[in-house]
Image 1 (cartoon, helix red, strand yellow):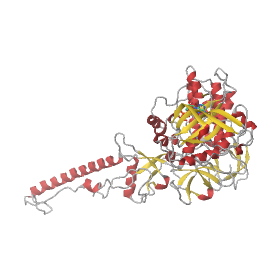
Image 2 (tube, rainbow, N blue to C red):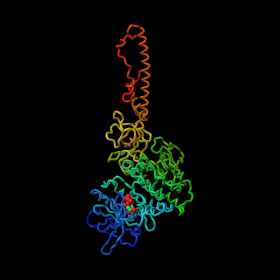
Image 3 (cartoon, rainbow, N blue to C red):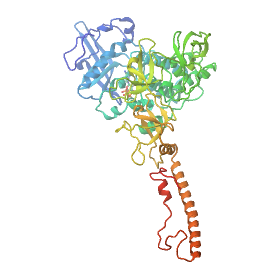
Image 4 (cartoon, rainbow, N blue to C red):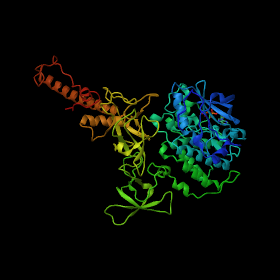
Length: 628
Ligand SMILES: Nc1ncnc2c1ncn2[C@@H]1O[C@H](COP(=O)(O)OP(=O)(O)OP(=O)(O)O)[C@@H](O)[C@H]1O
C-alpha cells in the first residue's frame, strides 16, 4: 500500500476485484491483495440493528455497499463499533489495522475482513456476517456440551487460526466461544483478530475497557496486569483457548457465577485453575492442564495443542467415546525441576549447539553438573520429542549421551531463562529481566521486563548477564531506592524490611513474603519487587553481630518476642539472685551492728537499684550490651 489511510478524508479509490459467492473463496482465487485498501467510507456502511455488546464496543448487523461505474454490490456484514478513543489514537488504531489487514485476509482461520471505517468518531471494523458462533451452538444444545469429536475439530481449526495470527506477531487475547464464528461448512473462524492487542498501549476513554485486556472468565493471570505480571505472549492465548475448550466440554463458562473481582482473586491471587472434566483422552487432558500453568513459559504453544488434538482425533468416536491411547504421552509431559515438558519442548537442540546443564526453574541449586559446557554432535533421531543428544565435552574423548531436556542451548553466552540486565537503561521498564528466547543466528532476543506488558525484542549485544534471584533467598530494597516501583514495608526505625522470595514471575518480578513481620486481619504480608531495586541479604552479607541477629528476626516474627521473653526471664533470674545476695549482705551487715554495710556504704540512705538489664539488652529490639 503506497499511502496511509487518513481519517476523515477524501474517498480512497477502491481497487476491488469482482468475485462471485462467498468471500472465503476469494483467498484461494485472487492473488493480488496488495491492490486492496481496507478503508470503507462511512456512507458505504448502513447499520441495521445491534446484535451484541462487548467490552470493546457494540456489534451491528450492517450492509456494505460497494459500487463503481461498472458494478454495484451489497454485502451483509457485522460491524464492530469500538468505544471512542482519545484524539489521534483513532488514527493510530487505523494505521495498526491497515498494517495487518491484508495479512489477515490471507488467513483461513480468521473471519473475512471487509475493512475499517470511522462513524461519528468511532472505529468500525466490518467483517463478513456469519450465521452463528460456537457459543450459539452451546446454547442450543441440551446440556450445552458439544461432542468431543466436534470439539477436537473446532480446536484444530482454532489452533491453526491462532497460529496464523501469532505468525504475524498478533495475540488474540479474547478467545471465547462467542468469538468463534461458524461458516457454512461448520468450520470455525476467529471473529476477533486481536482487537485487545491492537488497543494495548492506546489510552482508552472507556474505563472498563482500559482496565481489562480481554473477557475476565477467559483471561490468563498475566493479562490482568501485564506490566506487573506479564509479559503477555503467545502462551497467553493458550490459557484463553484452554478456557474455551473447557466451556465446550462442560457447557459451562469457566468461573461461572463469579464477579470480575472474584475471578481476579481466583486466577491471579490464589492461582487457581479452571476445572477440567475427567475422562478425556490423555493427550488432550494433558495439554489442557498445561494451558493453565501460572508461569506462561510452562504452557503449551499452539503447535503443541494442535499436535495433541490431531493425535487424539483418530481415537475419538463420533459419539464422544475414545479408544485408549498410549500412556507414554502422560509420562512425557510430567514436569522436571519446575519445568513442564511444554517449556522444555520450546528449545529443541540441533547439531552444533553449545549447551550446558539446566538448573531447576527459579532455584539456585544445580540439578546436575554433568555438562558445564559442551557441543551437540548428534541428535537421537529415534525419539523426536524427549530424546537424547550426544554432547562433546572438551577434555573427554567420547561424546556423552545426555537427555535433551536436562540441557539448555547457550548462544552468545545467554540461555533461555537467564537473568539479564540492559547495558543502557531506557524507558520506564526495569533494566533487569528474564530472557525468553535467543535466536541461533543474528542474536535476536526477547526479554520479559517488569513495566513492559509484552516481550521486549532486541539484540543480545544490548544485554549483559545479571545477578540470579531464586525462590527462598532473602532480599530487601537497596538503601538508595527512595521511591520503589512497588510498595515495600519498613522496619522499626524506618529501614527497609527484609523478606523472602516466594515466587518469581516470567518478567523477573519477585513475590516477597515477610515471615519476620506479624500482621493482623486482612493486612497483606506479601509484596512485589522490581529485581533491579533489591539486594540479597544473607548471613555472609550481614557485616556485624547486630545485623546478623536482625537477619535472624527476618526468618520468623516469633524470633523477636522469644528473644525478648528470654531476656526478661534472664533479667528476672539475675534480679532475684542479685536480690538474694543483697539481702544476705544486709543480714550480714545488720549482724555486724555498726549501722553500715560490710562494704562500708551508708545503710538505709544509700540508693541502690538492680541494673536495668532488659533495657540494656533490647534497645530497639537488638542486643546492644552483654550482662555481666
Ligand atoms: N462477524 C460476525 N458475524 C456474526 N456474528 C458476529 C460477528 N462478530 C460478532 N458476532 C456476534 O456478535 C455478538 C457480540 O460480539 P462481540 O464480539 O462484540 O461481543 P462479545 O464477544 O460478547 O465481546 P467482546 O467485545 O469481548 O468480543 C456475539 O454473539 C458474536 O458471536
